[in-house]
Length: 134
Image (cartoon, rainbow, N blue to C red; front, side, top):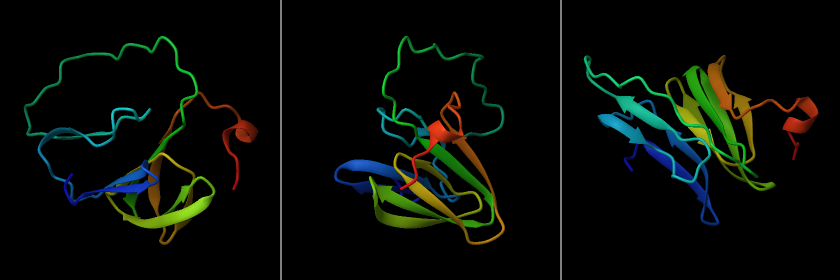
């Protein structure tokens, strides 16, 4: 992909994908591999384009789906620590307009006052069942 999309990989596994605010490829571009449980697409379209009304068909059965998370940084600056299982692999700095999809353990450090949106799979399982701290 373009230099505006960064894949963080360890042991042939995609740990995270960063999409920078500067990403500008026209059309609908799916950034994630087809086997990701979250599918991240970026629409860059001219005014007047319409997507027909639709809904997505439910999955008949899902088992052992690895939870993924998506962050969109609206403003400020955050550092995301990327882990390969229990070992820190790297970190990435995100600013306003940047986004990341995580397929691995991670940590978040707020470098500046920030606002970011977090999206993760549900249903919510409760505080004690959701996370395992490293």
